[in-house]
Image (cartoon, rainbow, N blue to C red; front, side, top):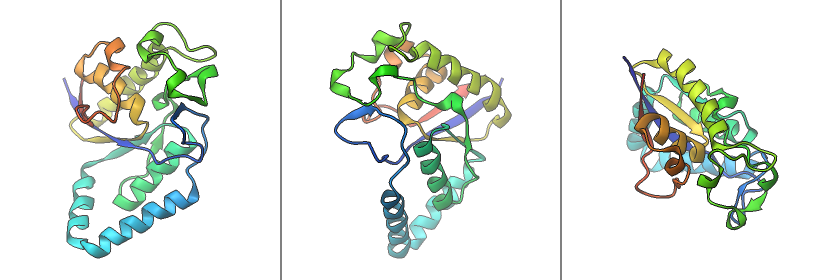
Length: 194
């Protein structure tokens, strides 16, 4: 029996991430957003180099960083790894979000609750059970190789907290898919037992 601590880190906003659109097409992160994050990081380094150096040292616990295979997630993970001096992130399509199909690009206000799509696929897309199959495959095939060592999942926060709540904490999938990463009660650290 083994255990892998999993830490979840959010992606940067993409060029079309506005107006409450949650199921959007995959566009890269705006270059000015990446540069803004670098500037903020350098400013923190100038203002409190001791604190920042401790944060960077703390992040050395991550022996591996994985991310979804979409542009903004890879760019976000690359920047996180660059700034925190982490290993190069490994993209894996199994960590991608659920495919919202025809609802891509729609405001969240027009979408039905996610739990209605656990077994039923979004029109032209996937169900949350399909998404779970991909994530479970990643967990079962990749994570045992990191037994006892923390892993960082950088990029897909929404799907990550939902799949981790189900796969690590045993939460019913229909409850897990309704979790919001903005809820302060939702953890960002999980423990996968195998």
